[in-house]
Image (cartoon, rainbow, N blue to C red; front, top):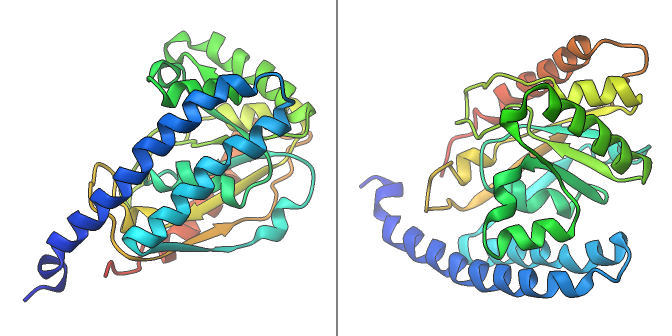
Length: 248
C-alpha cells in the first residue's frame, strides 16, 4: 500500500490538532496586541513574537514538522531587505524564529482580517495597496526606509504569491528598488517548505524543512534590475536542489 495514502487519516488528525492550537493562540495574541501599544516597538515584538514561537513548536509536536537553517552568519551585519521564496504558510510563521527583528511587506487587505489583522497592525508592517501602481512603490520606499533606519529588517516575498515546488513566479522589483534607493543590502532566502506544507493543503507532512540564507547582495550604486537578477539567480539555483527532496 502507498505509504502516504496509508497514513492520510493520521495526517488529517495531526493537522486538526495543529489548527486547534493555532486558532485560539492567534485570537489571544490579537486581543492583547492593542494593550501593548504603550511599549516600545521592540517590547511589542518580544511579546508578539511568542505567537510564532508557540506555533512553530506546536507544529513540530503535532505534525512532526521541523526545520534546519544554513547561513545564519549572513544576518549578522546591518539590517537589510530579505527576499524569500514563497511556497507555503510555514515561512510566514517561522521566519521570526531566525531572522532579526523585522517588519513585513504585505497586502493591505490582510490588515482587515479579524484578530489576525489586529496583531499585524500592532507590529507596524508595510501594508501596500497593490492596485495603486507607482504610488504603492513610493509608499514601500518611504516606509521601508523608515524601518531600515530604525534597524529593522524588511521581509518580502518577491513573487508576491505562493508557488509550488519546482516552479517560479515572476519576481517583482519592489525590494530591489528599496535596496537601490537606501543602499541597504539584499539577503536572499531559499527553502523547501512547500514539500512538507503544500499551498492550499490542510495536511502537513512530517519531516525537516531546509532553509538556506544567502550572502548579502550589495546594492549601493547598482540598478534595481541587477540587484533583483542576482537575488533571483541565487534563490532559484538553490531551489533546484532543495525542491528535489522527495516528500515522505
